[in-house]
Image (cartoon, rainbow, N blue to C red):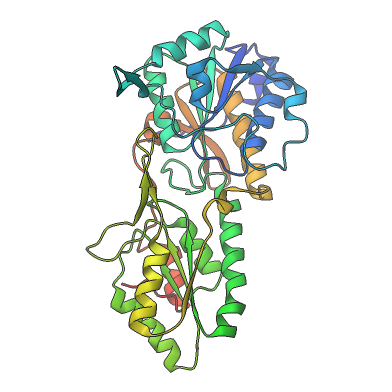
Length: 377
């Protein structure tokens, strides 16, 4: 993977490589998206004299030609707001659009239509803000000739080519607050409290919230757990006079030799599998085998909602500035990335090659084990 430092500051005095850019926010929403939109608009118009076209509702707007030239009124006051003022969708892939033909559902490639719509709107380059699904679509559009700069976004923090994605810190704040709050009711009623958090197949939210929130057990996808080990730890706490336990479980966690719990499937989505339900399943197992009252809290979309944390606002602003500077310098086919404290860029094709998972032997897992947290292995 090749990395590149930020675009040269002298670029602000040069004529930009493009004069009109589009911006799309696709996939699941998360706090910090509006900070990015505002940053892209202000940098593009204020520093380079570019125009910015907002694409509505993710790639649905690109397919249906629903776009609008943004003005200052569109970005005024949006910095502290969660979600995205442009709207989003995780069901619309231009390369796989569902349609009915003779009563049967078929899928069509409408990527050429998207490129035509962009040309009609005078969009010379696209800033795509999203997670692995969105960036995979953006990469395929880039392979068809579209000038693309990508910005990584996901609460799951599972993109390999950046140390952190914006949205993660805000989701972690919500999950940690929930773990904190559950301690008092768990201790008062002598219960096991199971907290199920998002994250898909990566355990970053569960690990971070469990470690920061003082969980006794953390179950993540990267470390398949043994139920007997879970029971054993709860029993040992009871035997030592600790009559409650806090368990934080990622939605993609699974027992050794078992599979994830799937809540439902949405076939038209770019990510059809919807995980969820591991918390209730685990609660039933603990209550039955340990004979202790167990309750479940599923945070769900609360982790995506609310005002973004200061960290996510600042990271979103920095990502937006860097993305526009790359576009102005004619550096396309790249994704902005946080490496340490620096904003750099990496090839977009590298960014979507694989997901970033928790290292079972890594520093965070080591720290958790050192303070007595168990992972059920």
